[in-house]
Each structure stands twice: as structure tokens, then as C-alpha cells.
Image (cartoon, rainbow, N blue to C red; front, side, top):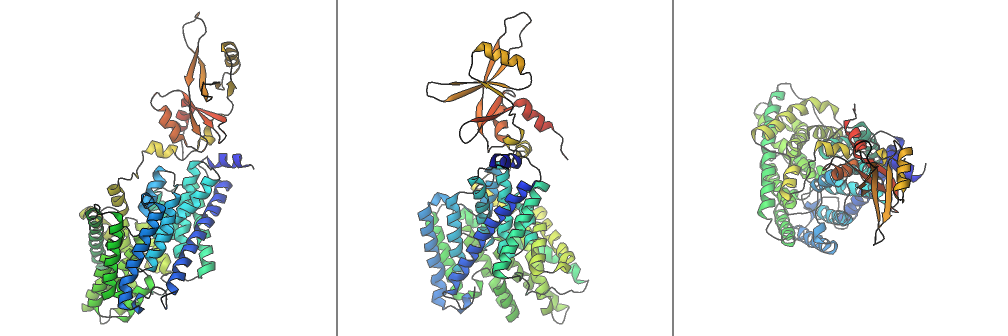
Length: 558
């Protein structure tokens, strides 16, 4: 099968071997880049830390200087790549998927790779899933753009890259699939689901080859507890919903409050704040699961845990709010772990020892807080269950997730932090149902290739029209500038006996990578006419009339 036939099959929104192939290749590209990103972070940390993420082992002055120097380096990278390419992270990827078919600008990926690496190395309270999603979408969609695949398949490729990126970052293929469907694409279509599954599997295979089989939270044990504690889980979920609302609203206040300060100063302020808190409380630096678990295991001092939660809360909202490159889910997970242990403390009035519940409530806190912050209950449930390898936690987690989500949305008016960020940045992320449907099909899938192209006068055109009752007839001519102009030729349906007249309907061109959404945008005003499809060599390869487009819109689907 040649490349053109391969592209034509990808233009059709259906499960195919071609779509599976690009899912595997795109997932492999994305996972390889994420593995390189993770190795870069580890290699740099080993240069000055005895163990990964053990910032507490540094001298106090070094803990202050490290984030400050990291912020300066991030500013330098942003300057070299251009400050206008600094937009990045999950909200930006959602915007690009919805309105640009998942195509990610190259310079934003450079910013995300090096800036994200520095942020994680220098102890900022950000997660690696933000860079993983951005870089995964870039690597996978770049492969599609390079081979000039139809834009509808590049969007699928972008979803594959995101799934592979999350899977390669956390070794969680199932959670990666759910996150893509629930948060990014916000749809469940089989022809999308299959390649995304394959990409997530590729990410997991590659990351297990490099980093081993262990799950990120396998060190946390979920212990069963008495059924009467299930009643407390509802209160627990409500409190997490309140904490998530406070987190989202405070973060948006920081974003809006510092918006008038230029980006260079914002990043430097974030470095100074992180350094100052790290100087006093080193346990608040970074956003690593194992470090938080060690803190919980070694300290039964509830006052220290509350102090770390408060410090981590502030460091996260200032790091994310002031523009440090990194993800929000990682620190939210760590906050959930610590908050879960703190909120389990009141059970000590009824139990002799609540330390056995620390692992269980750590996991429940992660799921509840993530749900209420990003509004992705199924992704939160699957992520925590897969990270900890604890399927028995499904029922208790549901009892936490539901009240957390309902409290956050209905009673406190909290929306997803991603949509709040997109609204503030005025980045569109919604699209009409008609355009969304049309964006799923490439022009190569429905165009009429049986057209007749003539550069002729009236007589030959009439002769061709008489012979070709069903195939469109196109006239082309070259203007004074040497550019070709195309017109759809039709009979003028006048009265009988009148001299035969022809109508020449000018046509606009659409690139062969485009979808039917672009065709609809050109034809919807007059509800008639046609567009021609041209190849990379400017050669006309097909015609789409309003009649063909209308038929596609009205076609029933399962």
C-alpha cells in the first residue's frame, strides 16, 4: 500500500490496521521522548543528591539557592526559544487538541523539556505529568505532520502520544487511556480507543524495560478497615472537596494577581518563594510520592504533617500560578496523600491505633483530591488503583470520590482547574457538535475523484456535461499572475426553448490534509457550490460539493 492510499484510509473515522500502526509508532515515539526526559531528571539529580528527590540532605543555603538558580535557568531557556512560545502544559494541550488537531509548536516542546527538567531537578512543587503530556502529544503529532497525515488522524495521534506519555511516566496504561478519553478528548469512540490503547501499552512496555516493573505506589499498603468507617469516608470526601475548591480558587487568584508582572519576574519570585520555604521546611520541596510516604512513616507528629501540607499547598499554587513548567497532578497527589493522613487523625478518638489506616487514607486522599481539582473521577479512581496495585480499594474510593466531586461542583461552584485556566487565558476549548463531527473525517475519505477537468470553451464543456450526468465538470484557467482558477460548471436551469447557458461557480481550494470542517466553513454561507482538494504539488485530486457534504452530515451512525 502506497502512502496516498494509507492517508486515504486514515481519513475515514473507523478502526483499521493503518490506525493501529500509527498508534503503535506514535506511542513509541512519545514514550521514547518521555523516557529520555525522566532519565535527564535523574542524571542531573544524582550529581548533587545522594538519593533521588532527597532535598532534605542538602545544606539550608543550598536548598534556598537551588530553586533560585533553577528559575534563572528557566528564564534563560524561555528567552532563547522566545517568550511567546512559553505556553505549555495540560490546558494548552487541551486547547491545541480541540482547535489545532493536536499539533504542538516545536519551541513550546523545547521549553517544556528543558524547563520541566530544571523544575523537577531544582525541587519545585510540580509534577512530571505536565511535561509528559505535552511532550507526548508533540512527539506523536510531529510524526503525523512529517508524513502529512490527514488532520483527523493527527488528532488521534496526539491522543496516542498523551496516553503513551502518561503510561511511560507512571507505568499506568489503564489510567492513561481513561485520562485521554475523560479529560483531553472527552469522548469514547472505538476507532480512537483502539490506537490509544496500543500507544499506552507501548509506553508501559518501554518504561518497564528501562525503569523496571514496580508501580509508583507499590510501597503503600491498602488495609481493609471496619465497615463503620465507611460512614466517615463521606465526611472525608466532603472535606477533600472543600480543600480542592480552596486550592483551585487560590491558584486562580495567584494567576490573576500576578498577571501584570512580567514573566521573568514571576519566575524569579517563584524561585525565591520555593527557596525560602525549602530553607525552613525541606520536606515541602519536590512532589515525589516516596518522599511523602517516608515523611508519613517516620513522623507521627500531626503538627509537622499539617505544616508540610500548608507549605506544599503554597509552593504548588505559587509554582504553577507563576508559570514554572510542570504538572499539577503530581503535587495534588502528594497533597492528597498528606491530607488523607491528617484527616484520618480524628478516627484516633475511636480507635487505639490509626497508623494502620495511613496507607489506606493516603490513597483515598489522592483519589478524592484529584477528582475535585481536575473533575476526572474515573481517571482518579483508575490512576490510584493502578499506581498502588490495589483493586480492593474501589468501593471505599467511590465513597470518597462522589461526595468530593458533588461538594466541589454543586455546593461550592468549583470547576476543573484546567477549564478555569483556559477561560482565564482566553484559549477556546469547546466546539460545536456539527464541527466536532465533521473534524473526525478527512476530505480524502469523501471527495469525488471522478471529476472531469477541462480547459475549454463552451462547446466542449456542453458536450462533456451531456456525457457526464453524475460526475462533476470543472473548468480551469490560468490568470495573469500564473495562478490556476477552478470553477464548477453546471447548466443554468432556465425555461424550455431558451439558449443553453452555463453557470461557472468559482471554487476555493482545500489541502488534502484538511477535514470536512474546513469544507463546511467555506460552503455553509451559501449552502451550495463546491471546493476542490489539492495535493502538496498543488494538483487537484478531488471535488467535494455541498450535496456530498450534506449527505455526510445526514448519514446515520451507530
